[in-house]
Length: 296
Image (cartoon, rainbow, N blue to C red):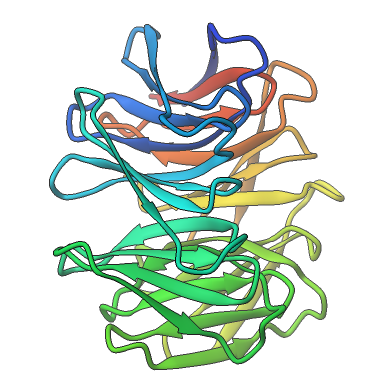
C-alpha cells in the first residue's frame, strides 16, 4: 500500500480554509473562514472561489444537499447560507441575535439542520424555507457538529456539555453523557457499523456510541493531537483530522488507529471529507487544501 499526501495552496492570502464537502459535480467545495468565500477545487487542484454577500460572515461548516446546493453556517453573521453550483447566494438570518451557528447537516426529508453554539439551540430550515428552533436542556452546552444518524434522527456533539445529543424530526431531545469527563466532543459521523463516531478534542480520544447509548473510547497515539472532524470513508474505516498533531488519522470499526503526517508543519487541519474516488480531502487553516491518496 502506498500513501501520498498532496497540498494545494488557496489563491486568497490568509483565507483560512475550514469546512469541506464533496459537491454533486464531483469537485470538493470548502469554506474560507477568513477569506469570506466559498471555494471549489477539482481533481487536478484548480481552485476558484465565490465571495459571500455578507462581509466578515465567518463561514464555517459546509454540506452539499441532495439538490446540489451548498449549505453553510455563517458564524459571525448569524446566518445560514445557501449557494447554487453556479454561485447564486441566499441567506437566512437566525431569529436570535449572536447565535453563532456552527455545524450543519441535512435530514432524510431535505430539511437543513444546524447547531447554535451560543444559547444552546438546534435549528431547522424546512424544505419550504420555514425556520424552527429547539432549545437544549443546557444553554451553555455549546452544540457543535451535527449529522444524520442511522435511525433517521439528527445527532450532535455538546462540546461544553460533554454529551452526545439526539433530536428527532419533531424536536424531541435526548442526551447521552460521555464517560470521559471534559472530553470536548466536536466532530461526529454516522459510522459504517450503524454507530455514531465522534472526536474528543480535549480527551484525545475517538469515541463510538450506539444509538442506544453504549460507549467505547479509543486513545489517539499522538499526545494532545486535538482531533477536530471525522468522516466515514469508502473503505469501511473512519478518517479524522488532528489539529495539533498535524496528522490525518484512520480508525477501523474495531478501534485500530493509524496516523499519517501532513507535509506542511503547523497546517492546522480542520474539516475533512471523502472525494468521489475515495480520496481523503481536508482543509488546512494555513491556507491549503490537503488530499490523502491511498493506492495498492
